[in-house]
Length: 219
Image 1 (cartoon, rainbow, N blue to C red):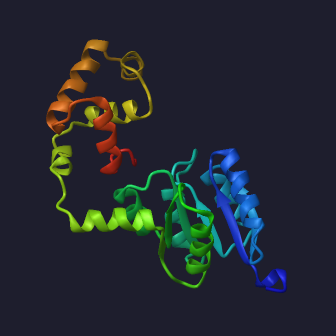
Image 2: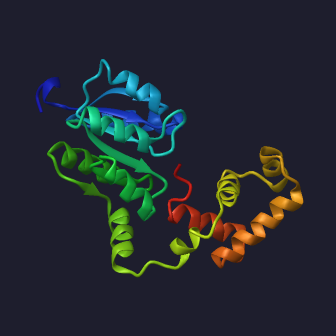
């Protein structure tokens, strides 16, 4: 492409500064791309959109102040001509489907190759939908295999038990969870035992894995 006007105008949002800087540098090195803005949280991204006019936005799912899911929903509702690509470490089927429902036209794992990202940008800019190979296989597997009993078992959990799961996923230990919800360590441990029993799981690591896969951590 010969002029700046011919380039695909891109904005990038990721809460990790190093990743954000690397993405901006990488994309600005491509002849037909022009990164016109970047943000480390959802609120800042939306504020930048008041002045910037990108063709494509690359957004992380987990960001402070406002998640990529919430941001995508707002952009798709108010500025549907902007193409959204989700770039996330959480490439489980629930996250992929939620982002696509909220208006994203592309979904890539952060483990993807640069060429995948370049191809995704060009594809969504042309009005196509793009999933990298890993995300496509995960989504296909989800559709072609029978759901496990985990999803139905989630209905057995109480609101407090779900809060406990989310706290565990955020790295809180028993004492910290007790202090957060003003309950004793013994009560926290009892909740954990009941949760594992209801879900048919052996330990906390399995519980967090299932919680992520079933989209339980998305609020």
